[in-house]
Amino acid sequence: MNNSKGLLIILSGPSGAGKDTVLKELLAHNDKVRVSISATTRQPRQGEENGRDYHFISREQFETLIQRDGVLEYAEYCGNFYGTPRAQVEAWLDEGLDVVLEIEVQGAKKVMAKCPEAVSVFILPPSFAVLEKRLRRRATDSEEAVQKRLAAARGEILQAADYDYMVVNDALEDCVSDLEAVLQGEKCRSARAGNLIEEVLKNE
Amino acid sequence: MNNSKGLLIILSGPSGAGKDTVLKELLAHNDKVRVSISATTRQPRQGEENGRDYHFISREQFETLIQRDGVLEYAEYCGNFYGTPRAQVEAWLDEGLDVVLEIEVQGAKKVMAKCPEAVSVFILPPSFAVLEKRLRRRATDSEEAVQKRLAAARGEILQAADYDYMVVNDALEDCVSDLEAVLQGEKCRSARAGNLIEEVLKNE
Image (tube, each protein chain N blue to C red):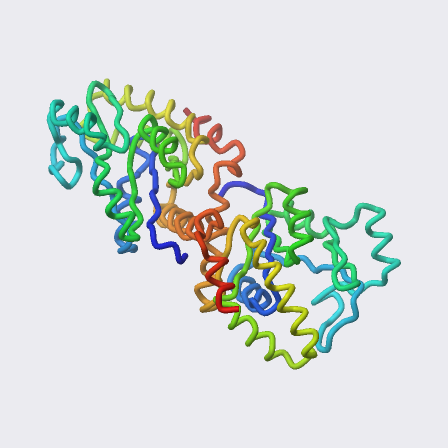
């Protein structure tokens, strides 16, 4: 509403839930939304680009960031660090832009604890069978990796109730519409209204 | 989302905030929304119709309703009873329809306490000056009545923060869009998701 600061949005969901596609659609229709680029120590996958998909940095660089309180959260996952550099996120929020953190469950919970004003959204697949089908379509992963991701997905989905919202990604269009409604609705929350009542009454 | 029960929506706001116009627009674009018709013991104003604007009933009839637990809430306001008959509201919710209760602040707080799952929305005027202008345009009210309404409005606006959401009615279209987003977003709340997670995992 008339709150000048943007919304901090935590977006999670298992591999294969379609977070990337949903985000791409959200960004295509909303020029006031930014996506935080995570930093990671893992190797880039084919087609991934430094500074677009992730900031690919060394373990040493990551540890320096941590020491300087330069990450909003970080977690170790499958032997690699993943984290959210703080400075860019805060600059965008101050500009009134909404900032999406696409992070996994461990990191999400840390941000929820640290930033209670954040809005957390979990993207669910319509069913586990659909999730498995989507994961198997990725040619880049070995069978072992698929099994690992499925087990991880189940564990993550069981934690979806800890998020403020759950949005099912069955029809992409409906999923994006729900996500947009969540953001627009959250901006009308009384808890975010600041001094709106005083503003309305001041011309009395 | 996949919750079969409808949303119970508490809608308040001072006279002149434009609740009726906002509601009319909401209904025009959403065929799954119903508005509860309040019962009142006050006299109909010019143009008001029994069963459309209110159920105009006698004090005796109202007291009988209260005794039979047939009102969701009731309050006395300017010497008259106003209340929400329970049966129709619950039938609509069970059908999966969203039901709007357009009620004043006293009654709203009673419903909030009794129905914690209800979504409460306060419609604000863009400024108190605009509110006064809108109220004075009503030819039906005497100056004394206008002054009474302005004093009541100030008191009500000061309680807006007790509602889940505040929506400003400046441009009607934006106000209705915000209200629709609030409803769509609320349906994605994890707290309303029922057994969605189990549903997603059951085909595993």
